[in-house]
Length: 265
Ligand code: DGL
Image (cartoon, rainbow, N blue to C red):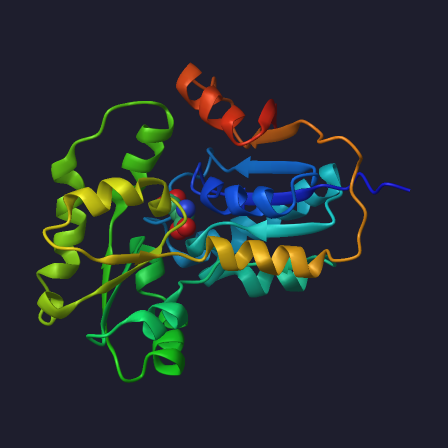
């Protein structure tokens, strides 16, 4: 028997594609349902209570409709706020996305690391806990950028973006006391790896950028080890939570990630 149940990825927008890509590379036959909560986008400027209520409710509806074998919350903001609530509400394995502070601390020579996320993520106690646990001998600088989220969305739609905007986001870290010694930057929003090349090009000096995508892909592979997959690669489904006509550039970006069908919740 080949198990047709999909893996369900969830984000506020296209950011989760940076998690989907390494997961597809490891598990090429896995059927995929990718949900962008465009009706609730963006998450990073919302209050905790709203995200904590919205995400478990939406994932409950999605789980009922698509019957996934596993859910991946491919969004740092939703994970740092709502992961425990989702796990409590659903009887399914749920993989979250948390800022890659642990590997950043292993890499940093200067012991100054930056955490670039959404405004909501960088103020979470979850980030304090990770910093204390894995980077207690590091200075951990944080900066929240709503602009970078919009830039990543624009890039995926095929639109040109302004290099100065990437520099401004980096300056949010570099201009803080100690920023001159920072050598590793954690991309703590799943939208940001989609613009990692632009960030690197805008940086005034070489920085290491690190995100959790590859680690999450390995976690998904290990949680589904021994399970069967359909023989043929099924067409991936992109689900939007609100009425929306995806522009041609976005459709092409989704297709490049194997998401050939579009549905609405
Ligand atoms: N991609 C999301 C994250 O990882 C959130 C972006 C947003 O909606 O503000 O945090």
